[in-house]
Length: 418
Image 1 (tube, helix red, strand yellow):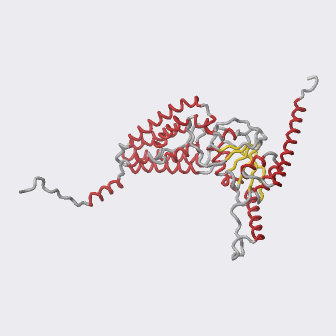
Image 2 (cartoon, one colour; image 1 turned 180 degrees about the vertical axis):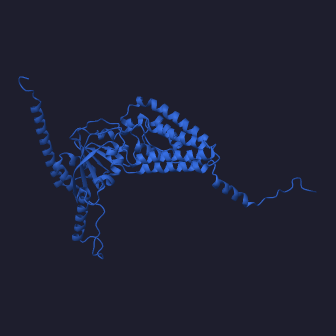
């Protein structure tokens, strides 16, 4: 009796897989819509780095759909657009020692990139580099005298880090909501023009307007996203015309600290700025929530539209890849304080092999500043001679404050007969 269901024959056909892969590489389909969901954090960092003026040259790239959806989450739940700083540091009030963990993107990047912009990049004869080399050499000489290091080596290598260098700057007139037209800015302009050029060429050669439409719409949405006034309000959320002195440092164990003097009364209140978006009025953020949701919907619509592109997909991938490279470049490129609208004038650098000796030297010239850093670099108990030394500095600081108060009272008395 014949079987009711005859056995099916399995076809061994590896050629079909080969053909499928070959066709995918010739004309990749649906890849661009998938890539639009990747790299949202890079887009967010690039925006935080370059937003400022009304025109923000941020290129259309992979990751924008993912970023727009995550932006809705932070806008609705945390009332902010700016991402959290990607570098941890501390802001210390040099007058009272109050220490704050930084939440500002701008301050985080200034401290992170300090070794790139210090001495204006002059690594050979710059004052800070020279002082650092000097104390490293002193440390090396001390180790040689004490017989430390590998006894088999006649030459003891110079250490990579020692002591503390405090670079002193004066805050010049700040320019909030300012972003310098530097290399990242012009790179963004160039990439946007190149992306549109690629799409136009395809349109002219084959009459395929789909990729030009996707590129143009994506660029427009990216530029609109970067032009929201809420970005500048969050990025520079602080008071202006501050006269306080501030210290920026990575914390205990750091090689560098920045002492920023507010003697001219033209800088930003960095203590305020360190608070990040917590200084914003939540009621003022309501319109931004609506705009963020609307933009996310527009990006999803663009994603659905892009999935309909079946021809000349390599051109669309080239456009997205160029934009992604530009976003990565902007997100990681080191910028100077003046590029964020916070110009600083270098005054001097104070460095010693021992951290405590550096703090003593800073306190001698800038009363209260060394004391304000002490608890950060020495959170444990001090030796009796150190306690006595700091008590002496405290007495001098109090005396100077009393003298300043007397001068203010004298100068504040109106002249007779006026």
